[in-house]
Image (cartoon, rainbow, N blue to C red; front, side, top):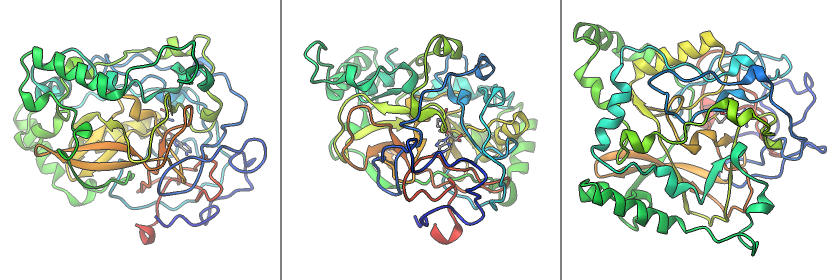
Length: 413
Ligand SMILES: C[S@@+](CC[C@H](N)C(=O)[O-])C[C@H]1O[C@@H](n2cnc3c(N)ncnc32)[C@H](O)[C@@H]1O
């Protein structure tokens, strides 16, 4: 993407102490592929979270979620009332403008309460697509690779070379274990594979850009669907398919690590690099270039629901955005349900890349290493999302060639 060196026009850099670059606060360069650099604050001192940043319990639907910490980070952003970023990929852009100094996040960043959408079936649908399956969480297969920062011990303690540490099973071994259990549960054979680990099986169909799109508000017949939905007791046939989670997840499998924010806050110091970007994930083992790292999963929602959720976010003043627009009426929202991938922060010089794959007729998103990643490195990818309204979201990735914000200009698309 055409991220211009330095801050984007209009992005005031003087208004705030530039913690992103230079100086002791600079972050170690991030790995990735597209953009530029390291997560900011990597070297900065860990900052304790405040109680106010704790996350409220999730609503019933999301109850079993893994999204704790998401909103709680102390991140510095501009304009506290900036709009929530829109789901990736499509979009357009917002004038930057807001020159106000980045403000730390507080209570307002709490985890949003799942919107009382007309899609009460959303959660249930989640279970639907996966069919019967083991209770094994997909995350298990990913455990050796990544983990949400707050739960991660210092990289050195996880060093696989440490003789005191028993070697962790490989991701392939864990995947095999998962597949065995799933097969034993009676799940169809095709659902007992982790596509991204199957050599040659899945088909990569493209790379995905995260964008802050709100486009369907303007160009889609969402209203029609809404009316349809109201008439049919909240169930619009056409949208039903988008309320499911990608296979092979079953509700149980997706119901991972329902860790509460309070637990994370209890004596846990967030890693330094989250000082400005919020919670993050880091590698717990060395990852080779092109290796599969994790799948981006979440609730699959349509554009209308996405818009409703974004509006809710704006009203709540939430600043963390977890949606990824795959295509029209197909947005994967990890706000209320997701795995560690939801904690991957943006970097203008990322070490991972989000790719779109076609697996057994279904579109799935996989995060792959775009370069070799060392143990302890923050895992990032280039969001490159576009925002339709509100001030630009300032980027604190710390990359030397950071573009200053997480939006992408139309020209660079
Ligand atoms: C998918 S979430 C990543 C996890 C998030 N840090 C958290 O605490 O839950 C995306 C959000 O993280 C924050 N973020 C990620 N990368 C950032 C960066 N480079 N600079 C500033 N904020 C960032 C933004 O609030 C963004 O909406």
